[in-house]
Length: 306
Image 1 (tube, rainbow, N blue to C red):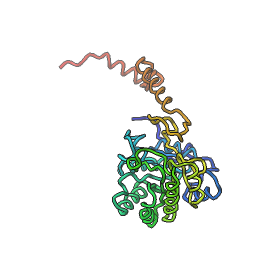
Image 2: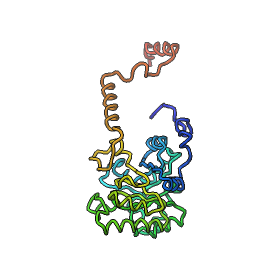
Image 3: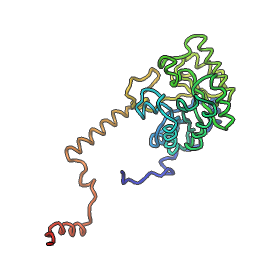
Image 4: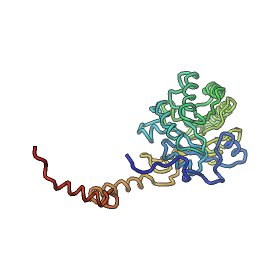
């Protein structure tokens, strides 16, 4: 519980500089590709972090299925459900005003049938306020992308290292390292673009392969472990802040150490509680002088006789 005043979603602190205040849309990102202006993207999973990311003027916020690991403690992305993804996306929606908001279609939400995939994608848009959905896979997702596009849902493709295929790939391995595999990735990207995909995530592929795919596509590419030639970059927010409890991947750059900050703050709090220095008198509420005097006198009264 908290007795602090709630922060209004319309408060000045949630506004962004005038030069970056325009709402980011799919055409905004496509124009950035044409102008060769890099696109920034990050994951977010709750209201507070989404709001901070949005206030930093990031272009694209993704509610990634990586929340299975960084928020729920699972070993892979496979365990997160549609209900959980919708819940987290709704929370992030409340914190995002400027950025384009996308949500990951979790494992098993589109694998049984295209019709089920469309229904689940519609939930992200209608119930959670997502402006795009991301699906993993190459040419095997063409029909799904076409149907989602027909349903007026913006689709972000995801090829290369696709975490939902971790068992088939035998682990989190760089993809497209052989000539045939690299050519297949390009064919997958072109097929998804032709089906209607509006963005393409390239994960865990050689820099040279990502550069060629980026040059061949007319839609923006967003890289994660795919080199600097992509039209934009994305990281998992918890990786960026050192809030994952595992060794960082090669492509992760740490921009802060929130883990140490939080741990030190909590330890200081615990020590203050144990020493009796928290809360102080200044951090306590008081009766008025008149009421306090009357209240103290009641403490001296003898109990009534039966």
